[in-house]
Image (cartoon, rainbow, N blue to C red; front, side):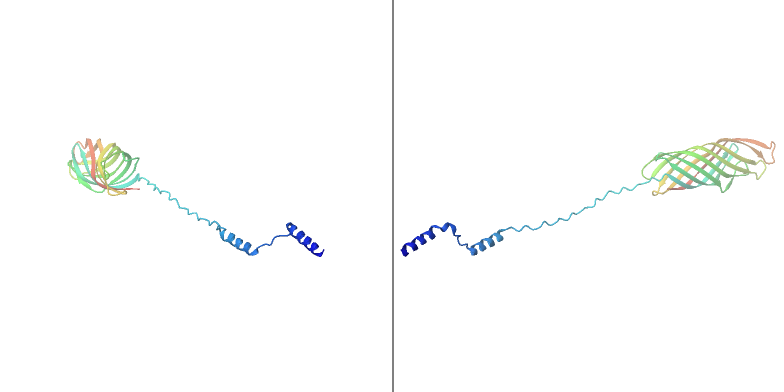
Length: 237
């Protein structure tokens, strides 16, 4: 009887295996987890890429201001001519100021003062005392350095004559008339230039002179002309 009970109990235990949890192999689990950890890909944190800003260099355009204004000084020799004769080499110093609208046209104002006198063919001596002029100045460039220019305007001049012997003319011409001239300008650099020119200050003027110790004691001189020619310098700014 006892054997039967033991066998029944053993069979009961065998058939009740569904309720017994299987044994866990923890060593194997640790090995698998270690493998998984090794297999895991380590993704590093993104490194920020520095942004390099390349400075944009804007082109610098220099504003080139044309030098339109100028001043100048001329040393001139004058020739004074009347119907009785002429005299040459009347010294004259002329100061100028001008403005060029462009390379083809400008305007110029002048003021001159005489520094020497000269013997006149009609007797006595003559001296250019002062002269003034205002001109339109057409210009023609002949290259980078040289330009041809003209002067068209109006001028006033004063020439004083004094007698030294009988029959000499005595008196003063103080007249204004159309004036014109021609010249060449050579540019040394952007600021300085040299000028050679000839200008007629008085053209076809008239004047009544006194005649020293003569009868009649007056004389009308017509077709009076006054020319100047020489060299000068201009400074542009």
